[in-house]
Structures are given as C-alpha cells and as structure tokens.
Image (tube, rainbow, N blue to C red; front, side):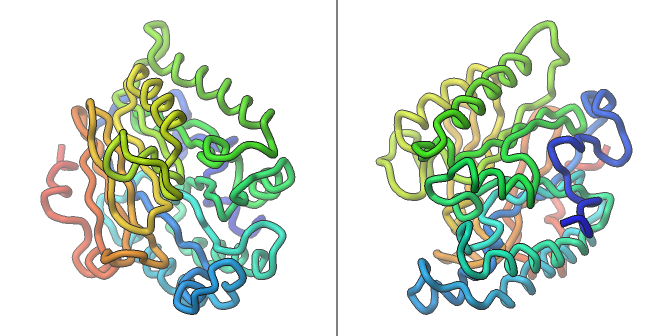
Length: 313
C-alpha cells in the first residue's frame, strides 16, 4: 500500500489537517465526518450466485460503487474531517484466492479521496477471518494499519476496536487480552478528571453490539449477550455517546440509556431494502446527529440541508 499510504490514517498518524494531537483535543465548533461500511469487494456476484463461501471472483461493481462514494464525499462542503470504513473492506478471507487483487483494487479506488480527508479503517470478519489468528491479524495490520487505536479530532475522542476479538478470539486469546487491557486504559483516561475532557466519545467497530435492542437474542450479526452487556456497561460508565458499526448490510440500531447504537448499510452488497450509501455524521457541542444517504442522493444533492445548517457557526 506504499503508493497510497499518504492518505491513510494509521495508528501512528493521529493528526488531522496538519494539526497536532494536542490541538485536536480542543473543541472548535461543529464538524462532520462520514461513516461507511462493507465495500466488501467480491460479495455482490457471490451473493447473487449463492456461493458466498467460494465465490467472489469478480468485484468491478464494488469498485465502481467505492469510486462513486469517494467522489460524493470529495464534493461535500464543508469537507468532512475524516471518513471511517467500518470493516469488511474485501470479501475474500485471509489466505484465499482473490484476496490480494481485491485489496489492491480497493486501495486504488480509495486513492481518489481528497488528501484533506483522512481515511480510518476498521477491521471486519472478512478482513481477519471469522476466527482470527496472530497471522491474519499481522496480515491485516500490514495492509491497513493497526486493528485497534484511538485518535482525537476537533475535541472528540474516538476509539477504533477489533470486534472480531470480542466475537471469537479462541485462536488468539493473548491478543484479545491485550485489546481488553488497552480499552480499559483508554476508557479510564477519557473519563478521568485529571485528563482533558472530550466533548464526546465515539466508538467504531464492525460487528454491532445489537441490531434493535440490547436484550435481543444472539445471532450472526450481533455480539453475544454477555459480551454485549459488558461492553454496554463499560461504554456507559465512560460516557460513550455512540457506537458506529456495519456488518448487517442494512440500516438498523437504536438508542438506549443515552448510548446510540448506529448500524449502517453497505457501500457494496445490500441484504435488505436499503440502497448503496454512506452515513453523514454531524457533531455539535451537545449531540451527534446522523443520517444515511444513498450514493446517488449524496452525489447529486450533497448532505441534507438540515444537517448542513447544524454546521453553520
């Protein structure tokens, strides 16, 4: 990825628009960012043919949709502070055919993103494998950056998490423990009276905590109840405002006890009635306001006018 690394926000590059991290800890007014999910190059044809395990040999459709997304984001005014892709960047699992080609073509498509809009990558189950191993994690980090990290932007503290370690870390328990220890340190610092107080705390991960309700049954598209409740309790204690995820290929989510669980549909393959799209997120002093836009809508009309007005200071 050397040819496009300059526009990718990796864990060691935690600055925006040339500002230092200390400067980004300060609230300077409302801003917006873009949440995307599941470009998943290769899934659309595989889904149509009913061969999601062995398919994925064509991904031109997803490449064009990703390019359309990039063009739409580049046109937005004011410019988003960043765009986060919440996992399943490609469909091919680690060490399977088509993986290298899908990653290469996705990077080329994303290279068109305006350099003033950093890209933040979140790992998904197809990026790491349903049961990740130290090897698949190393491969992901080499290609896309660290699988979990934090950054500040405009006075907001953001946590990027590896949700696959919550879902099934049976092949890498030590790596799961490392993220758990790190996460606890981050949440403690964010809520500490001796540290700079963030205006908001946001979390980005691939697998949703839940799809509609915190007490729903376990399924492929959410985290297990025990894990879910543990994270919900910790996030609420720390004052997390919202958790953004993908994975479901449909829009879902809900707000419970002041914590917004945002589940966004995909740039790529749709599994429900939604359209290929992106979520525009506006951050104000008091709230996080977000709305899913189709790629066509965003390309032709930009973000909705009521969202734009929230950005006017």
